[in-house]
Image (cartoon, rainbow over all chains, first blue to last red; front, side, top):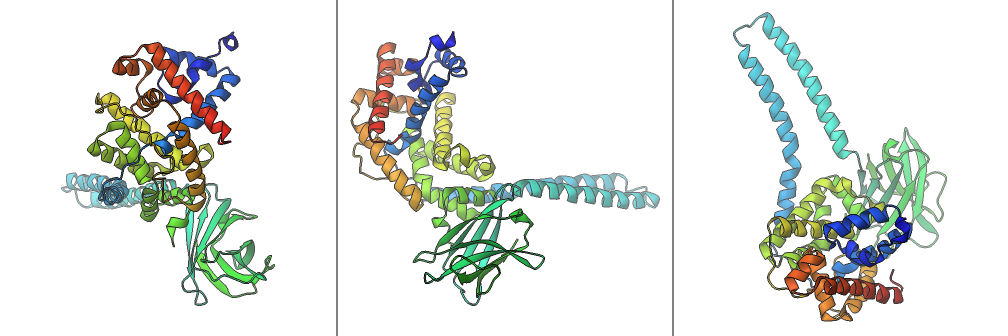
Length: 241
Length: 190
């Protein structure tokens, strides 16, 4: 039925999103059932994806970047400020209205204030946990042995995996490697070994036996190539979650 | 920490945590591309600036909606830019001045810069291939592609704008895309 009326001639234009409405509806209906046309469409969508690389480029005004970063900074602080202000305004208004009935009423108000504050904190915590949920990161700083080194450990959305990036570490001879340690309740678990390039830059994909987010601290030591069961060498980087 | 060496996915994860430096690196990497997309669509500097700002603020505020498994960050950004520009054209009824094809003529000229090393090699390769392929299309096919891609014009609007029969426009677009696909496949790009 639908398979007999392939829309091959319309697929290139569909990928470019330049079909008129009636033809777009026709293609939408067809590709929802036709795998062959969906595959053909994908080859055109791949082309549309790289078309921006073929355009004439223009240099944006020099001040645009600063403008964008300023706007980003402003948009970052606005929501929290608004939430707190509206609660306090409500509470203050309520207190003003009941001012003539002091005594017992004051005590009730104080209790209400406490309860409201509790709800407020719970709400703020919820908002913070939602807004920060997708990723966590740990900044790692160099020890006395490697004061110029720095590192960043980014933990995935599910908390199970992570990526470590380090910069400014000394290049080691081939018999040694750096090893990441995942620390929890004083126990150190192997997080993987890695080397760095001539510029001291290296990275490591971390897969651990338990969620990375459950560890309290992270450390990096110099170990024999391939790693050790426990830390034996000098600590070069460390950081806490 | 030198953020310029981080790949796009890590940068976007840092943007989610309000790390302004990560947004700054993304701008250095893709600001020119985003601005150029908007400028090519609208041929208006002020509107192109406005759209570039919108796109980066959207990335700042909605970074958690990016899904690496569904595509590259650069594709996400250019798609947002393109549809934002097309939306301005359609809503404000903007008719960009002139209908000049805005494709680059020289395949080796002015390649995108500022990307991380791995992306850069891949992108430079893709850039040369698509530019070489685009340079082989006849002018009239490049023009209809430009109107469809940058301005978001439909077949009918392109035909009306150019004063060409609808069937001719449809054929040009189809042939242009088929030719690009063929040339890129020959280069083992796709």
